[in-house]
Image (cartoon, rainbow, N blue to C red):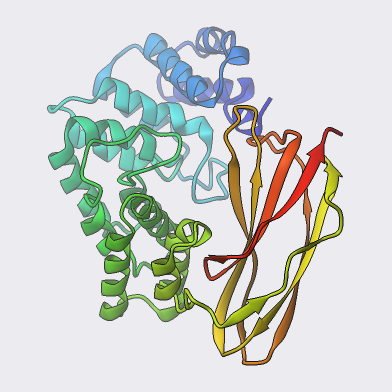
Length: 371
């Protein structure tokens, strides 16, 4: 079973039952747990969250905002007392936010429902549930979200950026303009919490997938305004443009001070072996010689076959450095050819290239066989 599924395991469902029963004696924690736990083995994480929320709805003696009041009172006095040691929270409290989104998503309940999600997010970040309200009540919900940018809790400020991301992972798209969240992140990019600025950077990265010039305009404006410390702004810019750098976008390299036409010469790629097996290491090397001073970001890019026949292209950072004219750098790497939880390697023809400030080298081919 995956780690995240353990995050909403039988023991944690039973803990939810005990916490709710402590403030609502009419709630039957044993019946609730039996009902929900029976379904857990066949469910992934998001379905476990939904199923647990459904169980709460079944066994709470009241509904709507009255039920939400019980859930809020059932929370430990603070995230720390709940045993939470990170900013994101515990999945044990994800069903509570899901309950709010499912049972209080009306115009009449909107203000109190959004406030409940604000109060819940220190226990488990509520961006997924927030997106239901953005979809149904965009104007009024955005007004509330903008007010959260000044909240004293950095987890709530981060929620303001995160819930409005155009491409939030594992969540449905929201039917708003690509730049709808820009006024929100305008207020957050100088935040002193890395948890917040990481979300701001991710928000920009989402926008950059569809409109890189817009992101460069925003970053240029922020740099001119100078509201973020140089180190903090540099972090946001690098993170926001990371995916575009891996795709070789010249404008992204130029913005960060990496010349898109770098004054370097690269020797042909040398592979230790052109015939490997899954599980072995790809060892390669090349010499990079600078003909002028420059700031460099060197990636290596692997193109591999997939079961569907479509090629998978993945870029990895190899080195970032500054060079002077006449300087030669030895580039080398041993890359493990192993499958992961999200990528399964298959045998076939692979290619490798070096990318210097987005400019690719001639590719080198190698073949990978089964173990």
